[in-house]
Image 1 (cartoon, rainbow, N blue to C red):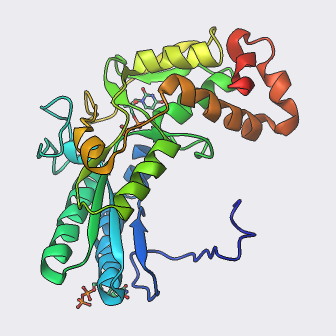
Image 2 (image 1 turned 90 degrees about the vertical axis):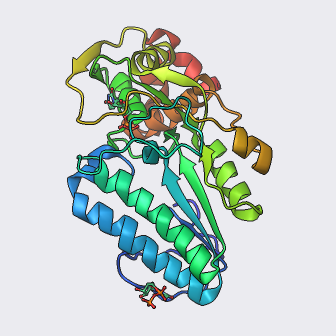
Length: 288
Ligand code: UDP
Ligand code: UDP
């Protein structure tokens, strides 16, 4: 939205599942819902987006000689038997489960990317993105960080799925953007893990949200979803060595930046002070 006034910016609304003719130098291919709630909603459309959509973008890259960057995912590791996950690990993915449309879709997208590289000499880059959060995320996106932040602000209980002992590693969005740009501009194909190695259980995440927003926020346990990976933590040695990249913003630094944005969007600009007063630690949010 904030780029709409920029004469060098053009938005085209298009479904990547349909072919498209464009003249471009670089393609950042991010298309596909990434929240489990959204990608499970229409699983066939999710896999079409990952397979046909990626095929179309690779066909476009081949035709115009563009460099193509695929945003793959830590989901290619499935419920990993190796910890932390290194790029050379082939993963442990259920091919017929409710997450498969996304996991296997992205795995096929990686395959297509490498086949266009080997077969048609398309210049390609592959990033495997780990859980990412930040300002301007959809408030009802359904993923854990946005859920907990919105719940704590609205004085609702934090919904922890399962026993809350499963882990994820949370990366602040600006670190990811920096990593993707370095990958695109650099010389290496990848795949590269792009994620923050700081690992948290969901209960620990709930505690950080309590510390940041409302120490009185309640925790409510809900049944977990099917095939939920037990742990997730990137080994980022390769990105450090070959891209000179590593995340700079810890969860405790990044979360308040997201909270400020969510406060404005949930309560409106005027009510930020009102919303934070009386929450104990909440008033520190705006100053970080
Ligand atoms: N494609 C596209 N835009 C382009 C070039 C190709 O959307 O500028 C689509 C094309 O419709 C095809 C896919 O990308 O379905 C793969 O293209 P490619 O040329 O590799 O395969 P082919 O068209 O020969 O099957
Ligand atoms: N989760 C949770 N409460 C929520 C949403 C998610 O405890 O309100 C858990 C979920 O079970 C998973 C983790 O948080 O273990 C991350 O889920 P998310 O949907 O954010 O992303 P995923 O890594 O599963 O794609």
